[in-house]
Image 1 (cartoon, one colour):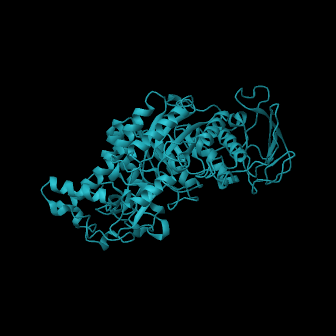
Image 2: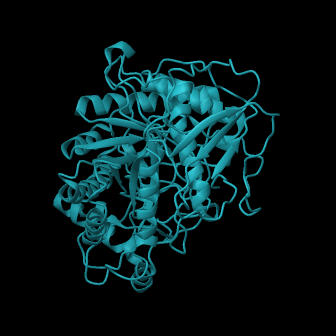
Image 3: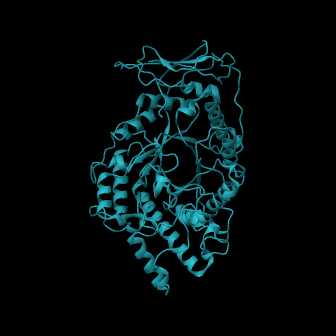
Length: 548
């Protein structure tokens, strides 16, 4: 198959044809031809199906990456000034479809080739519980994920795979719907208390309530047993790839895969930024736990329910008796409740990570866990939005150090979001400070001896966002990032200027956070022609496209 890839913005540096050789890992040959500029990706003898929408997907095999970047700096290379930070890119949420196959597989393959050419280390993908075990308990279907792993390996990339025990849909950035397995939904219908509930009784089906972690509520198995069986089956199926292609397993521990309560659900307009959210402790299992905790400290009256004055999802801290400046949060009752609420979350995270640690031990794959970047109302005393999510972080208490210590104890990388955000870009009325929050989390992970990785919280393609990540990633203070995962691969990413910004960012991260400006010596706006050596069994040729 031959692909002609055209770019309205070209970054190719001059090439010494005498010294430049094709990579042995490259699946084909590379040549350049100067042609008239165009704005469309095409294939020879291609069908009209799955054509790219004026894509400017820069497609280069291994040689093009070397032309663009030169040899990557080694991790910890003294010559680079500081350790390189590998960059991964999240794949679309629907990379594996509801039907159980890869979505637009040829387009995905073309995109992976482009990412490899840009110097990206690898990609991240959600392994959805709702897809892999949808046919019934202990009936797993890994075939689409196996196809993806093999495709990623062929393209010379690495994989971060997320054990996604939550539903997709109803949160920021969710562009598709992938519910929990049907047999789990049946269990939820029979016993609605196995999911979280707020004070008004509104139930959230995103994730199983941690209140029943150790109870056999899923056809005779506990949720922890179900998660463990899922991960064990995954390990057995992909044993040959773990530590080699699959280098990281991110373990989901709550909504959006994050260790938190579903305190700010966007579904049906329940919550809007920058609301404080609501406590999620009103299913019968959580209420029983609260009552037992209250009895244990001799204050039975504290166990009758969560705070009555904590307000509603879209209120501000000062609108409530609990979260206001001198509110109930800072009383004996408030401290008792918040300690119980946050400790239940920590215990849940430790249970899930302990299971993952035992299952993946010795495979060579690292483990990571994700913590949400809840930066709104950070400048208030109570940090209300963090409290409802389960992070007992206030002006007087560090809520992230216990999380970091728990992850460090399990040898788990703490993955934190909102690395791209600046305080000055946030609305003034929301009391935001993503920069101070990130700094606090960096300090907590350093103090706990944990590794820290990062993500951007929102889709960003601009230089400002990349520059902020670069600044955060630097390890001069001993608190750099071990990796960064970019959210998310889509057709916008491959548009001319957006692609150029990504390539420059990856180059900079490979040099320890030093800002790099790419050469602009190829002023002829040349096409990049990639000829692939086809196998004996040629398949019909179609236009490459970028997954949406």
